[in-house]
Length: 176
Image 1 (tube, rainbow, N blue to C red):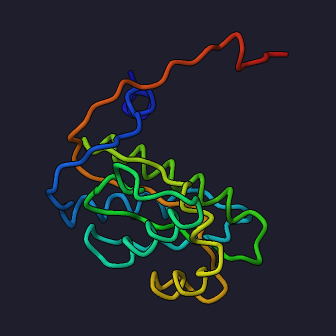
Image 2 (cartoon, rainbow, N blue to C red; image 1 turned 60 degrees about the horizontal axis):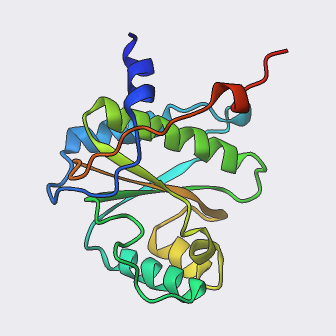
């Protein structure tokens, strides 16, 4: 089977990571995979901010997420203590930035699988990232002027395994 189709078939969400940091080569490959994603009208407007585990901004985002949800700290933080979290932001004036970021984040997740790494695509922080502290988080994460959070992905070496999800072709697909 082709390497890409194999990565698609094998990839699943990873919710447990080893402490080992990504190498510069691994991080570079993931960033290139995200930046090589197609964008509407070839705008190439997606910006990626890489943050290592332990950076104080991650705890601030977690606290804001929990405050907005009205919960105490859950058993795991939003990025499952992965060694690297990639935040994708897009031009807030361009209506396709969300779609473009979604394509880029899937490229990153598939590249991670191809490199033998795990990933978890993160949307649960959207409220925290776009709420009352949006400007603070955008500045702290060095988003370009006029950009806003779209989606994030955490990446690292797997400490937990999960089988890829099942699907039902009959229910989920119509061929005309």
